[in-house]
Image (cartoon, rainbow, N blue to C red; front, side, top):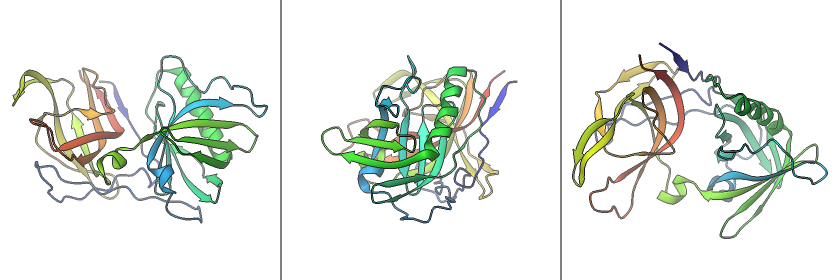
Length: 271
């Protein structure tokens, strides 16, 4: 059996879960704690935190387009600012760091990441570049509009230009409930309301102690939703960290909850 684990290396990525029942038999999970040596405001400006920022262009110190930051056929780097933590997605691992701002100045701490194995050498090379570049961030600027724009300047004079998309918290009017779902390797036949002869994910809720050790595993259930940002690969069992949001103006035969992938914390190929 091939088993791949996401090793969570610092307390900002260690899971801390509660066991409060909150509907549908699914316990909530408290957000992970953050550790940072950054002595700065603890809250990002709302325009930064309200959007996910996708890399549109990268430029070198001379203002010329810099190669290697966008890979053909792969999604662009995505930056998220939450509390004092900056994370970068669409790499092999979730790369993160504490950050601080002072006016237009931006300071990023030493990068940490999960440690999932990755067979994509090109993507791993990009991940290493990101880990080297981020701590050299120097300043940022924002432009509002229908599509907000974020520019990050680095110490060597290079820069990233990113475009903003509202976060799930912005779309759904508040922070989500963090929880962990184990997804079985195969979908199963299911029927629910207007869903006839559908194929559903099979999931169970996982809770963890404050030290990150698995504490409790629930019963398997058919999952009549999809998880935004998650693409299921048949034959792979995953444990996902997700955020669950309450939908407003629920359409007929739709769930009142929306599930959004935060990160994959464990993967295993079934025999």
